[in-house]
Amino acid sequence: MPGSDSDGITKDENLALAVLNWKSYVKQAIIWNVALAILFTLVIVSAFYLTVYTMLRQKKLGEIKNDFINNMP
Image (cartoon, rainbow, N blue to C red; front, side):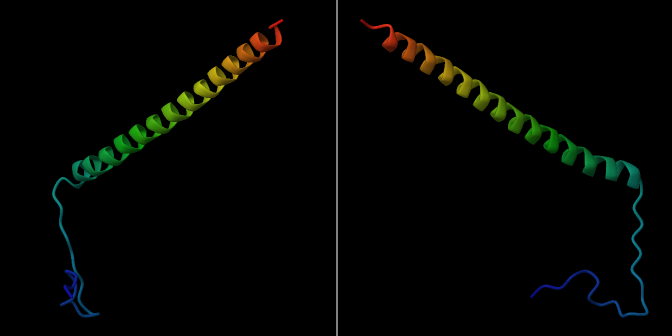
């Protein structure tokens, strides 16, 4: 079973990681998460709109059908 990077470190040792330009690294990491969240939100809102639109259209067609059948002699 492969271990983690800190397997060789005892309790009295510390692991320090220096990252140059850490702000740009964080921005790059966050921008993809934000972009995907916006994309998925748009997909969900679009699906909801399409569902409501289809339901209202089906209701209108059902009313037209009922009116047609009721007006038959």
